[in-house]
Image 1 (cartoon, rainbow, N blue to C red):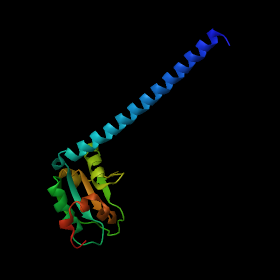
Image 2 (cartoon, rainbow, N blue to C red):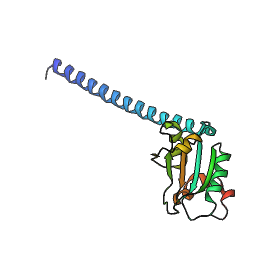
Image 3 (cartoon, helix red, strand yellow):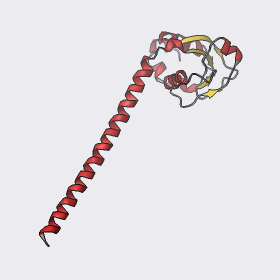
Length: 159
């Protein structure tokens, strides 16, 4: 093997090492960026002025006074709960978010994060729009498993 071919192999090995190094560096940078983005997004939602989010709470379970209790919790956390009461049905296994305006994506995103649900449905309602209600929350059975109630144990005696 000639001196020239050895240099070619060494040069090729250096290029491969450089490519691997750059790939690892890019993958690490992407991971760090993604992690930082999620962390900043979570901080934003935790510190968002929730008082500008106006909701109506409806109890969709057989648990009495659940909407009232959740109203107290949400108000202590800065939400504007305009109304609370019972849903037409008491058989909701999961909490449901109904976007009443279709215009407040950021507010709905915060509510989804708060209630730990992935989706919200848009359903316009002239009465609620006149009252400036951003969303109706129908409380489902899953609510008792969320951090909302775990963080407010004093209010949860009896549930």
